[in-house]
Image 1 (tube, rainbow, N blue to C red):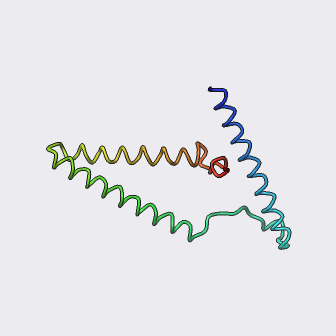
Image 2: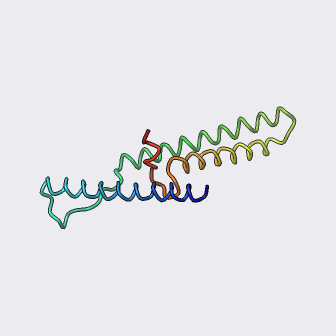
Image 3: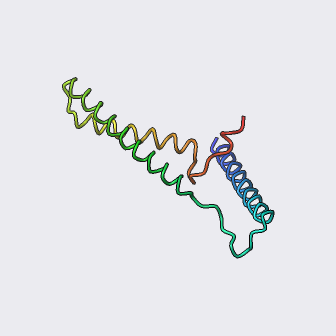
Length: 119
């Protein structure tokens, strides 16, 4: 079983490396087609709008986490248990689920697993 998992991971990694090489080649071809001077070539980087959106998602996620912790503390308090235990419980569950989903989609290296997109 472990060998099958290792082989699957190696195949996914090889596919990601091939896709990355293909994207770099397309990027270079696009630069060549536009006649951009070789000294001015840079790899794509994050746009200001994307950084702004990332900050907004971070703030929204923080507010959602705080509200979940508040609701959990309220529910635990109504049941006669410690509200702080409820808040910590909600915090831990939320982080575990977020990390589990992130790992399932993005993998250990942070890149999107292309094998999940294939049907």
